[in-house]
Image (cartoon, rainbow, N blue to C red; front, side):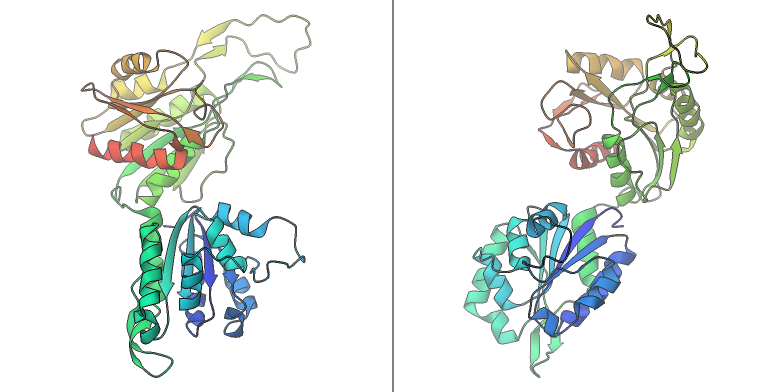
Length: 395
């Protein structure tokens, strides 16, 4: 569920800090990477070594600790996080972050973090019900910070009432909900192509294009998060193959990718052609390394993978294709949609700022057979992946 997700867990000075150990364990079992930040008071309840053993990462406690490779710790962790979780969160730390106080590594990192945030309070009932605490929680909620309700029962102070840290399994389930959201692809098979193909010229050189495969990999991760059984057919990509994908097949030439896709598309419910296969290949591939001052290559057309899939598409299958253009983007994409018998085309102008190759963002338009066009703003490719899947599910 949480493969490839980075979670920063803040642990504060509360008797419930021991429950954070189970939170880390459950997050790790779900596939997440966990970095733990502890306040000085938290270390009085649980030793950092415990969290280091469970997380496999160094625990950060001291903003001025120099016994590690240098980086600006609060910034690097804030940028790394897909979600910042504070569990348990004391009234003191909630008050600090509500008012922008940043006097230790936890509160400083929280302030610098722009990702999703989830706070799980734990305190005495009277402290939780105090007007100032309620005001601080309301202020954070108004800024988009998520909160978990506390549990009820016997508290460490001997009182009975609200204020218990929510159980670890419930907290982890909420983390999964925030990061993974829908499970609307359970039981579905999704075939995704990614990256560029390579067409050999000789024993050293090849023809290719600038596709990085980032969008295809983002789609594979998103589909897996939503419960799909994903097959990723990847050419040359600049990002790691995600571990959450059930099957990854490498296909470096367009001919290889054609064979892989045609063989596996028969069983797929959704086929997403986000790769950039080379349109042409050299008619002749030379052995060894060519040593010539002048070289003329004769190119021949490669098979059109998307068109072949569209021609063989079965009832109920959904085909999503991509159109990377440099001019007349939507006009060209609409023609491609009809020609290849696709259900949706994702079009983008690769010359636009933030929408080119090998960047983490894109600006896309989604075109459909009925003439509908959805124009999207600049967004992360990981976010675009979910938009594409939303529309593919609704086709």
